[in-house]
Length: 236
Image 1: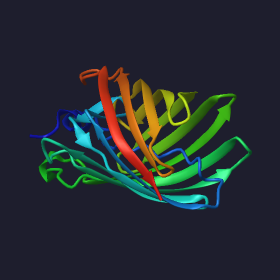
Image 2 (image 1 turned 60 degrees about the vertical axis):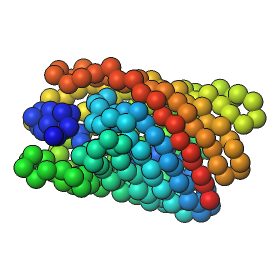
Image 3 (image 1 turned 90 degrees about the horizontal axis):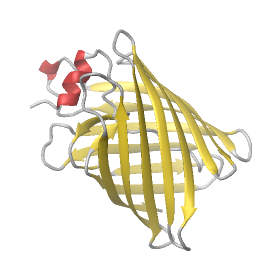
């Protein structure tokens, strides 16, 4: 049976069916080469304020070379294969100053288990541009996304703050506010708060645990979601 959120998104003619936000390119100004592998579990899959699946594994891999990056992110539900998703993304970072950078890229979203009879797109393509920087101890980001397949424009802002917890851990806080505007559909505002504790196991491995809350003002779709995440990140 189709995921309720997917059906509602189709009825609203433009609720985004996509998932992975592009990672902030903190490494964009460096010339290093690295591979980051992430294997988290999330008790809910929530994207831009809307829940698309129950508990899921969300493995990803990202390759960074200088100012360029490319990666793959997936959502693999534990109890079904209906809401599988595979995202391929790539981008380039431009250093504007010691504290600010510009991020430009695109994401291809693929839904391998999507029923053709649903009338939804099996793949969608989204471009994005974002500005990331710091003001004092606060990290800020503002992104614009345009899904060319769904004719949907999204603006999202984030603010983060990190509190040290000894030599190996920190408490990272994040607030998110965004607006989704589909062409011909219902626009909505989404917002959320999150807290994550990354614990450094080795120079290359980090254990992450966190909790998040998100909601929106879209009528007819469940809101006020709370979920937890736990996972391991390894960088080569």
